[in-house]
Image (cartoon, rainbow, N blue to C red; front, side, top):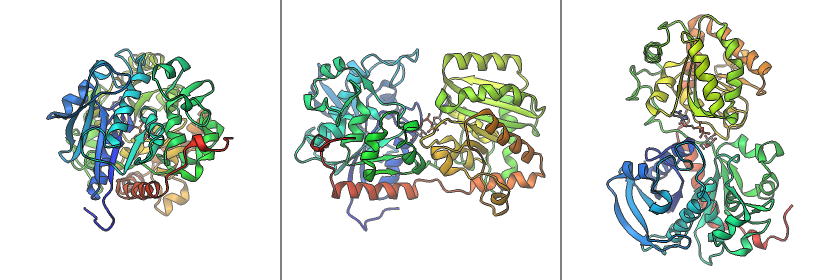
Length: 503
Ligand code: ADP
Ligand code: GLC
């Protein structure tokens, strides 16, 4: 689908992770699929990522496109070039002293943040800046750089000091992760002294890399309309709500899309039984396979709850722990959990699984194919996130006819329609939504979901199939980004160092 009705844009898409090269969470899903959606719309989009060993392995074949000498790094930085999906060019920034190590992009194998993360991602940002100013020898000058999360937050700040620069858009995927470091680190990075300013990077006597994106980008986006409003409040603004309110004329909420090429129960290679809206009844086969795979009693009339995610407070993992004893009281309920995170939660879940092997299966770790099978095999997907900028698992669940139970927050509020009697009658309901992340509110909703599952099967099928029919593809969101890109190019934002005051 190529549209040439408007001029083609050159877009550099910068991210610290992208599926299928390397993934720790939803940012990778977005960075692996939005550039492709933009390319499908005829845009010249290129992706830039650090050259972590796993990303290099996955991206082969690669060539060395150019080499760079950058401040703060002893040695030559290579820019390796490959392609995403055989189509979207990828640049991998190869600075072995900073990126060639085991573990994940942000932490060592024990989950401890790398001590030099500020240095690592500052170097990444400097490489992005050189490429985006066409000073890298790639003979390509983007019209716009789309930055994502704090790891790329320095890019808009560094570009703002340049006379002729590409436009910048900065997307907040999760304001809870800000990339905050101390003054000594700021000095080590040899950044311009004027960036140590409350309008710029300084943040309560430390400095914040995400603030670079929020203060300096021409446009700021976040990943759902509701979260775009929530981050303007003290409850979810994490101290940045004042700055965000100041910039709210340039803040937009754009819902993430998902890649139905990867997440489609009619063709998913990871699941044992394919199905679609017309053959919803076949979904049960995936349930029995999943029960067998995870050692649960094989019963196709069990009500199987699934959960996948980081075991952290944001995701309400502790709430799941608290409702567990109550769930176990229902004879027909089973629960499958896949995740890793807080060691205390991991321990608790393992223990509970040991005590109730006929009711609970817990897999601690990261397992992409199993995530697909849980989506296909569960009846209900439990997502009690305290806050959720967008959330992807509820979107995958909807596609897989796995009815989501979610907290009315952020992207969950924007994507799941509660099964009230009225919504059921008019056919708009797609899941169950509770208003508060507390036990009373969750239980009211779980009780009504369990009761609803007990009604004649046709009702459940109607709800699940309605979810399967929703369209959360990138179609409209990619279009929305293109409109924001054009606005950013046409109306550059003033440099915050020239703002008269702030707050
Ligand atoms: P977040 O990015 O905040 O973790 P999202 O819902 O946006 O949350 O995205 C999480 C992504 O990571 C989804 O694609 C989900 O399937 C995947 N995921 C999370 N934990 C695991 C895990 N333990 N194993 C496999 N996939 C996981
Ligand atoms: C973050 C958010 C999640 C969102 C994802 C992709 O990790 O926590 O809600 O879906 O980014 O935008």
